[in-house]
Length: 185
View 1: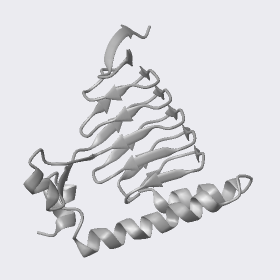
View 2 (view 1 turned 45 degrees about the vertical axis):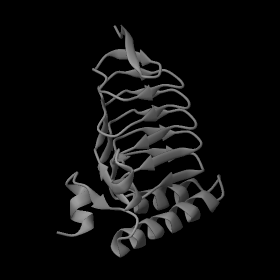
View 3 (view 1 turned 60 degrees about the horizontal axis):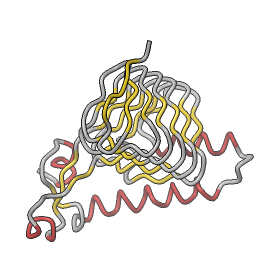
């Protein structure tokens, strides 16, 4: 089994020394750099390049520059997707965004995690868990979503939150760690 197959299956894999994964990340970084270097007024060029980076785009999309991701092909976005400046997605596993998702500046989505054991971690080993964000979700500035988290439909995640566990649909959730503080009517 290749390291990429292990990565996509959620197994421990060699992230730092596998030539195939290194090459794929470098190709994606080149595309992200090209995207980040485009003129802001080149709306059509920006959208076309995003569609070549991301795995699936269902409808209108706008990601303000700069934008960074590791592979791109593991990212899926629904219709009417907007992300403000400095979006980072470490997409070693699938990252799915539903329709009408709005993301404020400086947000990060990390599917990659590392072993607790320093011996394993120092070998370049890691694992990846998917992230899912439902429909009609607003994510405030400086939010960090960690591996394996699902955020349900119709949620608001408050600025500065660190989302370490699933957030049920129809919730307003804030804090570090992020907790539900009220329901959305």
